[in-house]
Length: 134
Image 1: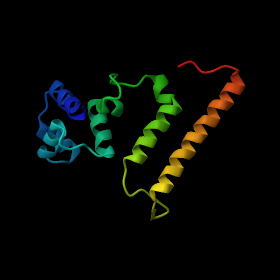
Image 2 (image 1 turned 180 degrees about the horizontal axis):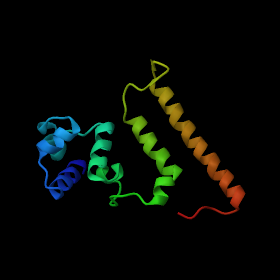
Image 3 (image 1 turned 180 degrees about the vertical axis):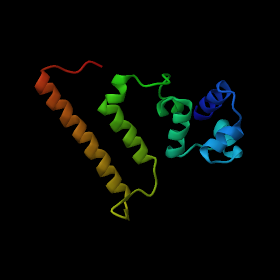
Image 4 (image 1 turned 60 degrees about the vertical axis):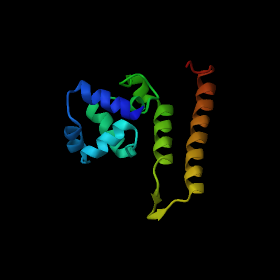
């Protein structure tokens, strides 16, 4: 999915693989591998690609058919936390205070974010007395 979307966006802009590669600081072969699905961009490169084509990372990953986030989406803390969770899970060798985190520590951080989100939902429900519309 990522490769198809990158290729489609690149062709829409009428740029070559070499031009995109130069912008991203990778080789033309790397772009070719992305487009053929033989390789996936790391999270940082994925963000650069999304910024270059003015689309969301979710669009590139095929999780959304919407190229842009609405203002409401940009402010939605749940979406921000989900993106952060995915970045954390997809990044190897995460460090805290100069020490590499164990998988157990990474899982604890992700769980803490989930607990915090659920607590905020409960407080909102108590404060406003109704469930948020989806």
